[in-house]
Structure formats: C-alpha cells, structure tokens
Image (cartoon, rainbow, N blue to C red; front, top):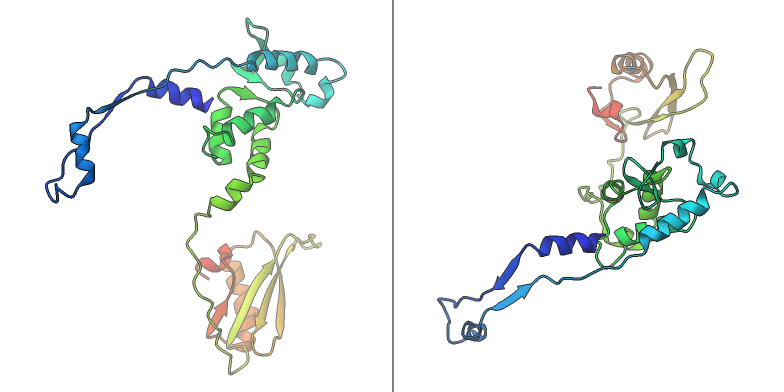
Length: 253
C-alpha cells in the first residue's frame, strides 16, 4: 500500500541531478569532473503489482460469516450494516471488513508497519492510514497492541521528554517538621462519609506521619484548610515541601 503511494507520487516527476563547479579550490575538487559528463536523468520506476488481496478478503469473509465462525468475529450486530460491493466483498462506509479468519489483519498491519516500504509509524498514524481502507472490531486497540510489541520501535523511538537532571543529595533536616514530604494514596474503597483518598504527610527528620482522609474531588481550598488545621497549627510552617508532580501540588497550594 505504501509502495503504491510512492510510485504514484514519483510518476509525476522528471528528476535531473546537476553538479556545479565550486568557485574555490577548483583544481583539487575531484567531483568537478562531473561537469563534463552529461547530467544524469532519473525517471520514476513503473511497476505493476499483481495482488491477490481482494480475492483473499472475499474468501476470508465467506468463511467468516458461516454459522460456526461468525461468533468468533465478535461483530456485535455490525454485520447488519455491511454493504456488498460488485466484487462480492463486504464493507462498511467503503472500508473493507477484515475478518479474524484468514489472518489478514496481521498481514495488513505487517505491510503498513514493518515492510521495506514502511517507516514504522506510531499507532495513531498507522490507525489513521488503515481506517481509510479497512475495518474490524476494536481496530484501534489491536493496532496499539501490535505497535507496542514492535521491538524496533521500542529500541529506536525515544520519549519526547526533557532529559532529567543529575541527582541532588537532599539537605539533612536539623529540626523536626522543618522539611516535610507529602503524597496521596488514591482509589481506595469509599467510607460511609465518602472519603476515598488518604493524604500522607511525613517529617523527614523523625519520620513521623500524619494521615488525613480526604476525597479525590476535594478542591485546593479544602486541602489548604485541612493542611492549616492538621499541620500548621501543630508544627508551624515548614521550610520546604517535597512532593511528586501531582496536579494538587503544582497548583497554588
């Protein structure tokens, strides 16, 4: 599929390669001899691809709609929306249905991701390309799983994040409750009062802790009042607070 797109693109161009003499160091320029040679003309290759894919799709669809195989396809009633093309293949909104029978999904995903004419696109780009031509249940989730198992992508593609800095030794506290750490324990079973989160606040020197029950939906104002009531009223205002990148702590606490 990707090869065919490149051939259609290159067929519209007539390329020429020229090399021009440099103004400096003309004698020592070995490549300057190319000026005497007739410019090389490169034309796009014209290839005829004989694919058996349409017939394979038709054969797989015919077997998949049989009574003993239709349950495994998990169509969820989408088979009623199928349209039949003149060649007999079934489609939805002009997108060919690729059944589970025949292993055509793996063939198509391999062609669009790992073949010599593909560039190992990410799952979103691959899904956007394939959904224009094909359809099957849970298509996006299956493509995400397929790309996630690609060893080439896991080795080559890097995360789009800034590199982390060097580790810095934390300053040792000299007095209790001057330097503290805090974090949330979330998604706990709700109590009778509706609390489902525990706010953990730890003194770095003595390792003493406060466990404050809260709700995941509590606003910043509510957490601030709890902090003043439970921590500031007992231990005063700390010099520093260490926390993760939770959205509560990156806001105006």
